Length: 211
Ligand SMILES: Nc1ncnc2c1ncn2[C@@H]1O[C@H](COP(=O)(O)OP(=O)(O)OP(=O)(O)O)[C@@H](O)[C@H]1O
Ligand SMILES: [Mg+2]
Image 1: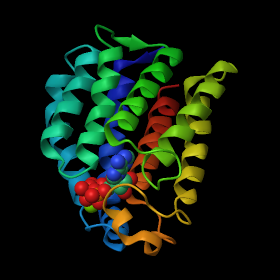
Image 2: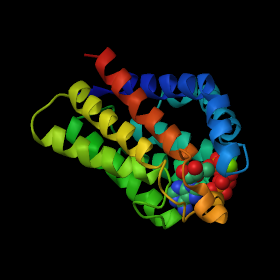
Image 3: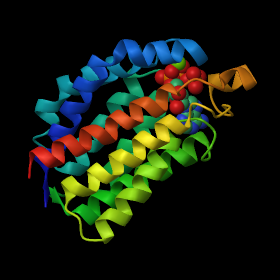
């Protein structure tokens, strides 16, 4: 089972990754957006970390919902509502739980990614965070179905996430601010895809540490 403390570790590791990669995320957004992605995400996850001591007293559903609400209110632009939706949806599916099976985690993450898809209307190939999250969830589902444990399955998902991130480089953006550049968006890695890869990588880190 994946304990609540492991999920708190995931968020903590992710907040650290965002802080460590803040300038890189902002530089990626400077190339095809408005140079605020690292700043937006770091502001949001700094606030999330301040709320973690009280959120972790509650069930996993409330923990995720609290994270989602914080991101909705603190992170501006496109990424705040989108990552906020991911955690709100995960929270709905985890209501009342203190631990999750890997299968439950996959179902919840998948529901969260569906939420991003509905909210942002992006499809695969549009050069967004979905180009990482969709293949990562598919790989995770397959790995979990084949009997791998949470650490192994998230490591497989992280490999798929990294490939998805690199695959955004030759894409032309058709969602968000980067789409205004048209063909000039080609040749740059998408900032949201990069923060999404860090999210999956942090999940693998937390699951493997808990093994
Ligand atoms: N409709 C969408 N669906 C999914 N992801 C999106 C969408 N629009 C933007 N994104 C993601 O959000 C990232 C930009 O996030 P950022 O925090 O910089 O917000 P922003 O500056 O308001 O966004 P944007 O530059 O898209 O207007 C993009 O790199 C992309 O991955
Ligand atoms: Mg931006």
